[in-house]
Length: 128
Image 1: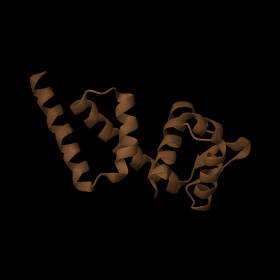
Image 2: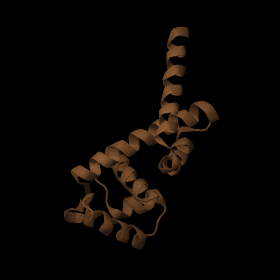
Image 3: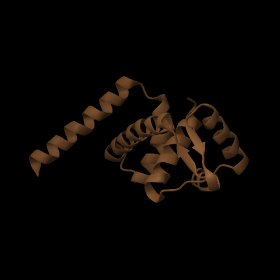
């Protein structure tokens, strides 16, 4: 899946968790993309079985889309946590960077980041 596809799915998932219903207009606003760009992407996701468009234009992730989105968000949030811990950036900036960086990072790099976070958290618990 292309970078933009990963960002679309994870953003739909996040927006649904925040407010329940997501339409193309909310997705366009959140991502800063044009409505025609969003419409083309949505059609592709529908065709590939990642989502459906329900009555009123509500975007619903399919089982396949939900599984993929949950995994993406999990990785993106872990990367964001790592960036916050190591770079001193806000969570919002770290998450934005993580969404763009996630596809380029190897499984080994992600495992290293996860191990680092776990070690830091364990040290903090021992000290606290």
